[in-house]
Image (cartoon, rainbow, N blue to C red; front, side, top):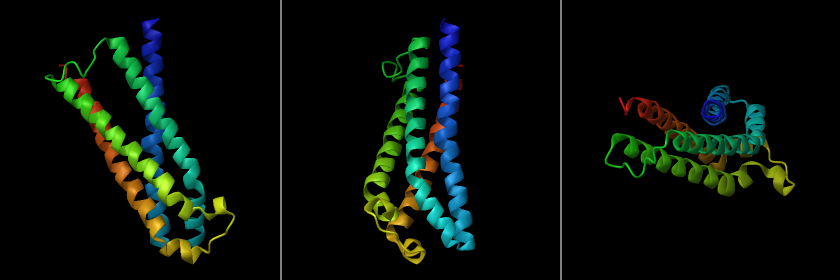
Length: 165
């Protein structure tokens, strides 16, 4: 049974990484292409997709957290108790970075998305307004910051594997 649970936790962890990190990479790539070509329709499409992407990122964070906790329980290593060890410090760093990532995502969703996605208020924004909107710039900057933090978390996850050697 423990082998099945460990396999399930690994599978959920991979799916969570695909949703969270992969989604941020694709969003950053598409945003850069749209900026480079100054494609107003592309910006409108991206702005309309941001709420769906935010839900996908949230599911990814939940999957990563749940699968990480499941692995921690299966391996029987409460990392915070072993803070003098490198494993505990890396685990604590990952958890704190996840909190920053989720907080930044909540800020994007609560503060900037209502300005970027005017369909929620029943209005249709002109593409020129969307391009120059400070809220759209903040969404892109904060999403890129989240991508950077996610890549740091992934790197810390890889160091967790080798911290017990």
